[in-house]
Image (tube, rainbow, N blue to C red; front, side, top):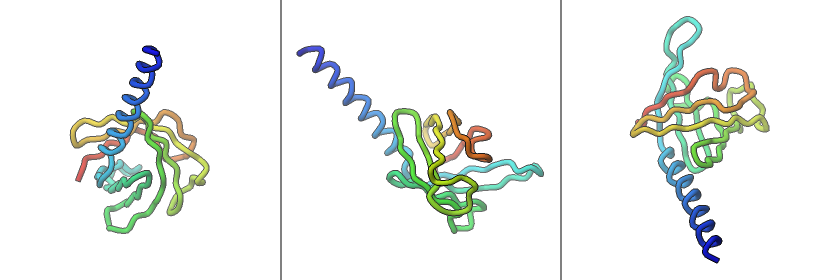
Amino acid sequence: MKKLFVLALFALSLSATAFAQQAGMVGKWAGQFTQEDGSALKFTLTLSDNTYEFDMGMDGAPDLYGSYISEGDQITIWNTRGASDCPSDQKGVYKVTLDGDTATFTKVTDACPGRGAEPMVVKRM
């Protein structure tokens, strides 16, 4: 019985950690990519509960929409509509590191071309 209680407590702790990480990611983030010509392309990433919007160029009109599931320090993403070469059934898995108002997404696995080529660093807006 004692082992069962400890196991349940451990599972609850993992669930609380995943929830806290996901809740910590919800909001609006800004970052930039370096383009082939060396110039910076700024973007915003807006994370809501299990959905995201990506606005390339920060013009206020999202270019890409998607969904995500967060488990522990990993997030699984997939695009649902917008400008993308990736079908919605092609999912990517990323490790997320939160450090204050900075989040870093590092690819674990993602076959989508152009997504995850380098770690994506964003700052909370």
